[in-house]
Image (cartoon, rainbow, N blue to C red; front, top):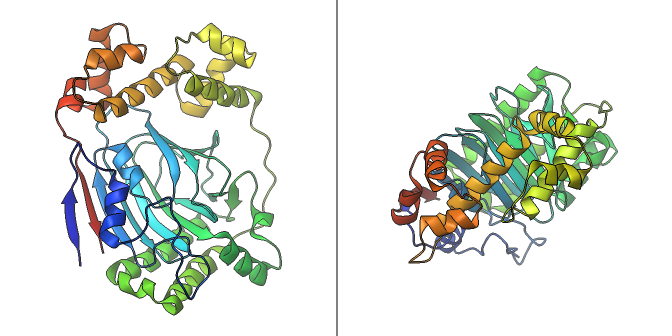
Length: 361
């Protein structure tokens, strides 16, 4: 049965609402059916989400441990539709502005992402994704995906054991043998488009009748269809050169900023920490994030303020939150915040304008 809910603050996490509605454990738990291997996902769960809040959209994806940061000014809007077998999560996600997604794939899985109609190309771990490439990471390895404006991806997270068994049967070698630096080269633009078409067709079928995914036999067939479409066209990997040193420096600087986001940070501080001059660091940030180091720091702090205002306790003031985040010029802060998120900080604090519709089947 299809249900629709609008989530308002104060509220529980959207992820907990999805879990309650479907009588399945929360995103961090593992479902264990009696007659199967330990399952990774709630079989048969299909969710459709539309949200103007980047954190709500992120929270509804079962099993992921990730944080998304809005990188460009503009009112955020995102959509996701996700279906599950006990060992696979597949779906489509899109958003209307540039974001950076950092985190790890669900436990016991390998995640695979296929960009759709993305222009300019997204960036994965600091380098652009080629038109013939898809990106993939296994549990335990941090994903760092920076999407361009108006991005759309097909996403599959599949149990490592299921993936390895089918890859070995088809290729005679493990899946990782054709992955280089978290990327798999499919050989041509047409091949990636064909994979996207095949996965979209499978996903459309299970969206129409999600109950079939609770049947282990049908679920296994769906998993095999998804994997066969991928493994049947995956090419032999071409070697990739290491990222330029300046991008490595930018990555180290990013970690420095995130770890000290509540402390005063100057550009010389960052340069001293990573051992680079300002020009090298500036070029590295332009290549990796499309902006200067201090502009990126400002973006991180604006996103942090937004989360704190969303979840603030009664009596909290905008001034308190802004000052704590290092915004000492409150008038300039309010102007920058409004330009970036499309509303005043006081509106985020006082009015629950962040609406998230969640549909489950």
